[in-house]
Amino acid sequence: MIGITACGAYIPRYRMNRKTIYEAVGWFNQSTASLAKGERAVANYDEDSITMAVSAAKDCLAGVDTADIGGLFFSSTTAPYAERLNAAICAAALGLPPHTRTADYSASLRSGTTALVSAFDAVHAGLSQFLVCAADCRQGKPGGNLEHICGDGAASVLVGRENVIAEIKGVYHLSKDFPDYSRLHDGQFVQNWEERWIRDEGMGKIIPDAINGFVETSQIPLAEYDTIIITCSLPAAVKGICKKLGIRPDRLQDPLTTNIGNTGSAHSLMMLTAALETAKPGDKILVVSYGSGCDVIAFEVTEQIEKKRFNMGVAGHLSHKKALQNYSKYLVYRDLVPLDIGIRGEEMPPVRHSVMYRQGDTLSALIGSKCQACGTPQYPKQRVCVNPECGIVDQMEDYPFSDKIGKINSFTGDNLAFSMDTPAIYGLIDFDGGGRLYLDITDGDLNTLEMGALVKMSYRRRYENKQRGVYAYFWKACPLPNTTE
Image 1 (tube, rainbow, N blue to C red):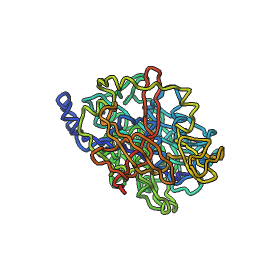
Image 2: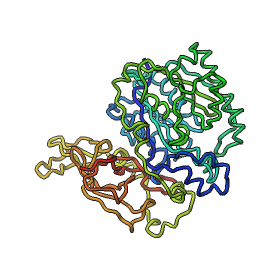
Image 3: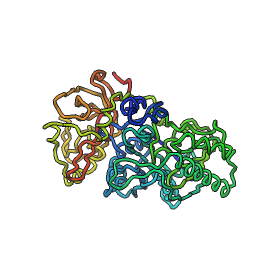
Image 4: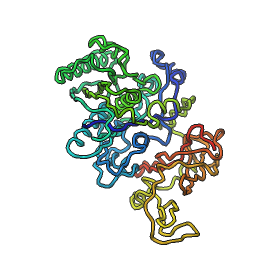
């Protein structure tokens, strides 16, 4: 049996009410008033598609032995690097073995499901487990419809043969070079053709054709599916599709667009994760992923779903949020408004490729060392045990800190140090099981942060050096909600 063995998601903490967008730029395009409902997820200034994909993967892999993962596919239409393997960066951050197969999937909103099907093929060919990560930070022009519709987020799915919670039952592909949403290689904004054209000629025809094609080839009636996932950003199009195919609205999975927005290539996997969080054994799920055609994938939930313990998932992230009430702050985070960062901001340390490479998993996966004699962990890696009662030399083993929970020993809010999210917060973190590290603290509020608060490690963009064409990633401490000792 081949199918999904685990899944996870990541939604940024910041959510912006769409009324905030309309109040700021609705004067320019009053037709967006109809979209000014609900809220959309907004990535923090130190987040991008890579960092969100890593967070979703960590959510998916909680309690999973990663040594047996044979590959990682990364899907995104907004990958930070056009020429550097983004999937390899994700694999390094997750501490996957060097022999892990990696590849990027992009250019289409259905690239997430395309990567998922490729992972099924890889497991069928002999690999034991394969990880798929999808994430997007799509940007519509300020004042336009897409600014309201899009949202930031990520999802991750692990494919394997053992402990399968959802078995794959069939796949159907339809490729169609339909002009709806597009972005040039060096473009900052997603462009779209007329909405009526996209709705009627695109989604309204391509999606039904794909579903009918799948039903015809699989010989499984549409009425047998308990949950149908249609990743379509236009509610009117979904309504027309359901009427055309006779799909009952109560069988549709919540599109999540009201609370998150459309997360691009990650949206189909995010909706699938949400569906599996509430699924029962025997449920049949149909995933319909739209973008330059359509992918249709059928699953049947197994008895293993009752033994599966989900981590944060979609439900957990939906409840953990903070309102982003300042539209100007959103523009700055998205690099849409030039900000005078001052002398301190201009004095960013240079990012050296050679140093980053030589440090290896010490930087990428937050790997320290642990004394084999006394069990004392420390970071960074050392040859000599830091324990004064031990001091043994060259008896160390690798020890990961990225999956450990820490406690804030002390912290500082610095209004003089440069930060895109003032004040800069950093502190001394004591880890469960031992070890201490001085780290930046992200997604935290100085007025509510307390000594003893528990934190998890979060992979974030640390520096940005556009002159050299490099982003430097490292780990930051992220406070867990309501966890003060």
